[in-house]
Length: 281
Image (tube, rainbow, N blue to C red):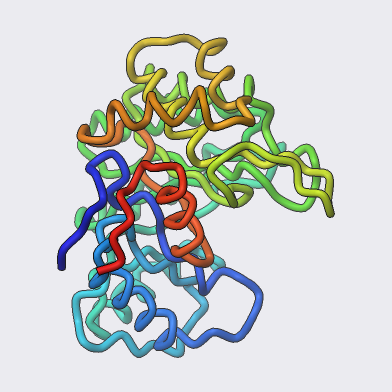
């Protein structure tokens, strides 16, 4: 596999085709991700995100990277992982919500702690609501990592209601909180394009993946919430493209990945912005 993707963008986009409404077969989604990974932009692609309830598994040939998205009981996850591995998958991660908004995330974190301690080949992402109990939950995750467990937070930054879209200041505070605790994180839902924008149909304002990328660079450099929020709030590429281009040969700090239903969409925007040198070879 050859790639023209710089280290800053490597593995940035997980394949979320199976998480969208529809009847896509796992076999079809798996074949699509293999095509992406074999293409010139292959290093942009991360894992295939597979809901734990999907049983129509056909992942041959072996070796496809997979992230399991829990949509059932915690107790069923080990069996799901075992079945995926028996089908030839390289199961890299599990992502599971630990609470609904307003609920205490600590009991769910305790469940995921047990899972992380049992299967140390997995990166476990605890989806923590951006609401009450967040900072205490991040402290708990940091303590687990200090004990040697491979666990990290995940946050939803969108949904079906306006309150599910954090403001730039709110998301900046979360990013800086993860920075302060040396926590990598994933983002889910709500990121559709490179730049922050308002959806004309829903009126919801979505975060842009380029905004988040520059924000994590600033946070990692020690900038505080106001500066990080300024990057998250930008709606024009000018203040964002050059900071990202200047750092594209460095590994990406903090932000592990986000999911996209079609990897070609973020790729096309990155090429258009000059952050990947498009060479359809």
